[in-house]
Length: 90
Image 1 (tube, rainbow, N blue to C red):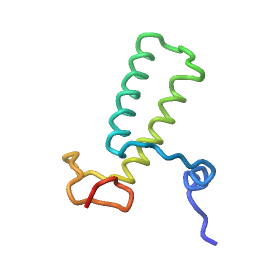
Image 2: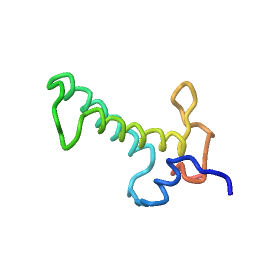
Image 3: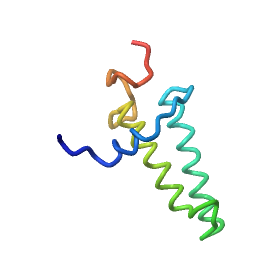
C-alpha cells in the first residue's frame, strides 16, 4: 500500500462539514490570519490558548487545503479550474 502524506492521515481522523463555500471560508481564514499577525505585532509572545505561531500554522494548513480544493491561477482567479469539491455550480 503506498504511503499517504501526513495531512491525509490527519484528515481521515477529523471530518467537518462547513456550511460555506471554500472561497468564503478561505476569505474568513485570511482575515483571521491577518488578525493573528496584528496580535503578534501588538503583543509579541501573547499566549492565546497556544502560541500565535501555532495558530498561524494551523490557519495556513487550512488555507493550503482550500487552495487544493479550489485552485486559482497567478491572477487569483478560479476561472475554469474546477474540482469535485470547489463549491462551484457548474
